[in-house]
Length: 319
Image (cartoon, rainbow, N blue to C red; front, side, top):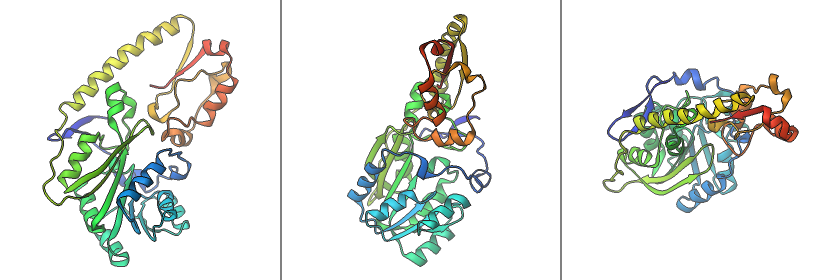
C-alpha cells in the first residue's frame, strides 16, 4: 500500500490506489457503532449542543444509528442517515431513523431536503478518511445543511502515529490521513470555518471539528511540508529500534509472536505457555479496533492466566 502527499499544496497524505468503495462498504457487515466503546461521545454531544439546536440531523455514514439515537435523546426530532451497508443500515432503521441505503450523492441529498427540509446539523464521524471524492462530499453537505447550520466532522488523527513512525496506522479503508492543519485547510477550501477543535484519546487519536459556513474568506493554517517523507523516515527509525530488541529477546530463549494491528490491537501483553495455537478472528480484531483501552476478550483472558514464568517465555508486541 503506497502513501503519497496527493494534495500537495496542503500536505495531506493519501493512499495512491484506493479500493473501490462499492467493494469495501456495501457488504462490510461487521463494524457496528454499538459495540465500540466511545468515551469521548458525551463530550462530542456536548460540543454539538453548544453550537447547534440540532432539531434536524443528517448523518453521512450513520452506521447503526447509535449517534443519532443519542442526539434524539437530547432533543433531535428529524433524523436522516446515509449508510450503504445493508446490515448496519437495517439496525439504524430499527431505531426509527430514515436511512438511505446508498453512497452519498447530490441527488440523494436533494431528495432528503425535499422530504425533510434543510438540516440544522450535518454529522460525519469516522467517515471522511474513507472518502475519495471531496468535491462530491462537500457539494452534498452544502445541499443538506441550512445556511446557519453546523457541520460536525470527526476523523482519526494521523499526528500521533505519524510522529511515532507507526506503519500500522495505515489501513486499506483509509484513503486520507488528516491532522488538524490539513482538516482545517480542507474545510477552508470548501467555505467552512471551525468554531471548535478537539482531540481525543480514542483509537490511536481522534480529531473532531465543528464548523459553520464562513461569512468571508477563510485563512487556512500553513500546510505542513514533507509529511509523507518524514513519516517514512520515522517508520524506518522505528524498525531500527525494534529489531535489536526482538533479537535480544530471541537470544535469551524467548519465543515471540508479533501481532501487528497497531492501534487496532491491545497494548503489549504477555501470553501463557499454551498460547502456541492462539489466534484472533478478523471480526474480533475489528471489534477491539476502535478503542485502544478496550482489549479483545482473548487478551483479557490471557492476562488473568499468565504467571511471571509464562511472561518470560511468551510476549506479544503490538507496534
